[in-house]
Length: 188
Image 1 (cartoon, rainbow, N blue to C red):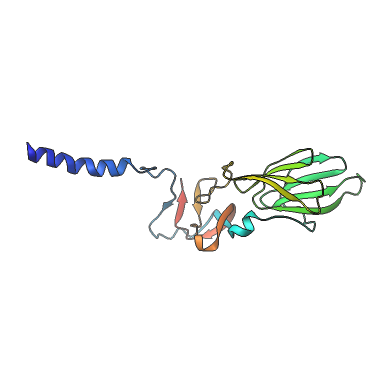
Image 2 (cartoon, rainbow, N blue to C red):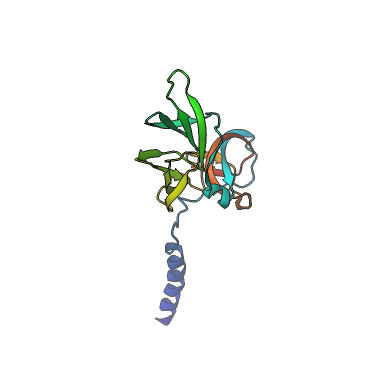
């Protein structure tokens, strides 16, 4: 009888260790293949920034619109998201000749809403409230960390091959499609 109890305890310990893991089956972890050459494939590459840069919000000179997103009009000013980078400030007083006047640098920006003199947007996965009464000198009024789950710093948004994340390069603030050569990380 002691022998059976002893044998059962050796079966229970590994089971407890296995079940106590937050993700015992690895559904949320990237899959790393053994080094096999897959050649050239389309996949995802992480976009890195230092933590300091990722959290910096500032009014800078107007920038070209490359990947325009959502817009909001307040009076003669049009605000347009530059996906992943920030918000364009465009004077539309002369509808035939709109003028880009400033760019509000907000790493990871994808969403935007305006209420009064406050602009609400995401800074990677944080919600930030900006005072835009003077778009030349935007002020951060509030920040709530981790509100959004827009950027996963471990795996890209879609399945496929990707460059494995290298924490020494900074924090992942987004993902971009890229041609990869013999990648080893894959999301199913």
